[in-house]
Image 1 (cartoon, rainbow, N blue to C red):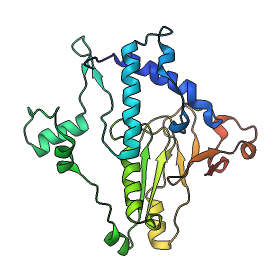
Image 2 (image 1 turned 120 degrees about the vertical axis):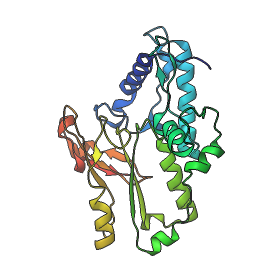
Image 3 (image 1 turned 135 degrees about the vertical axis):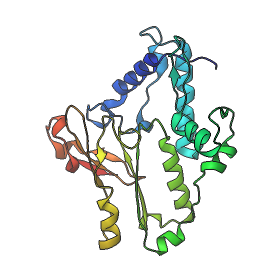
Image 4 (image 1 turned 60 degrees about the vertical axis):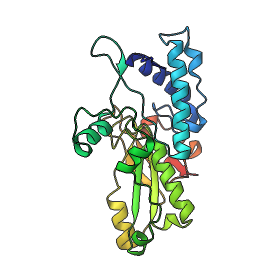
Length: 259
């Protein structure tokens, strides 16, 4: 569209979405636990806050692309803008762009804005779904992906897992994927960080104990929260009856079911 709204507008629209969908799971904790269940419409903000109509169009378009990414694995860069010059312009995606420019092309001035998906995939593509040899050697994968990762769309991991399962329906015998709700790229964010991802594959390999859930604890949040992460495609569901009248900060691993 050629328009780059300021970061504060993105922040406002994100906050509005959280306010609208945070409580869908029965807990007010600043986290949207099920994006598919979030029916927030950014159009409702026009005229009520600083949101411009053009940002609503961009948000809707980006949301559709992210949903497509979750289903098809097609990479979609997250939105970023820069106002260092006093005017909003397109922001860079340093993790990908600098790596390609400096380490692959060895040209800091290379223009990769119009790089095709095929060209990008030829450099960093990792889509081999045949993990037979890995499985035969007794290898196990315990993967996790933060649902607010602003570097690599969560849909990339979902697509790969689904593709592996399509190739081998017994994928759960050696590969399990956990979505870390409210966690950014690798760590940080308001959600609970899976703190057992090293111990889990060790026990799986050495003791034959596969995880049906992964313990997660928040880091650096005002109130420490503890959550149960579920192996995809199962979802974390809050059990209100079991939790009783616990305050949000007292709700923990045992108050959730994987369904």
